[in-house]
Length: 114
Image (cartoon, rainbow, N blue to C red; front, side, top):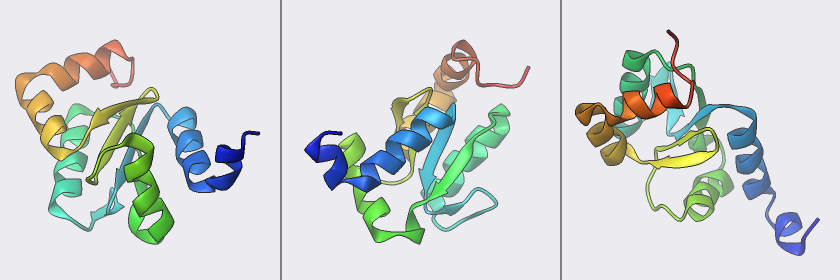
């Protein structure tokens, strides 16, 4: 184990969540009850596409809320990961959805129900 990994258990938790689940949304609240409009929008998009995803509530832990931003080097929440790859936040997910790119990408990754 490297010194950095030992020094940042939050990044280890995030890396494990991203590795263990094909689609992970780090969000404020939970999918059944989002606690911000941006998280709610991404949940609606994923539900509309029929994606099976895991929501991780960053509000449960301040280290997690800060850690996800440094893990991805992305300043905002929510953050969507598909097959270990950071896709983006609300604006990017919404734009990709509206253009049809998100559905195509997620279908190519094999994470949409047929």
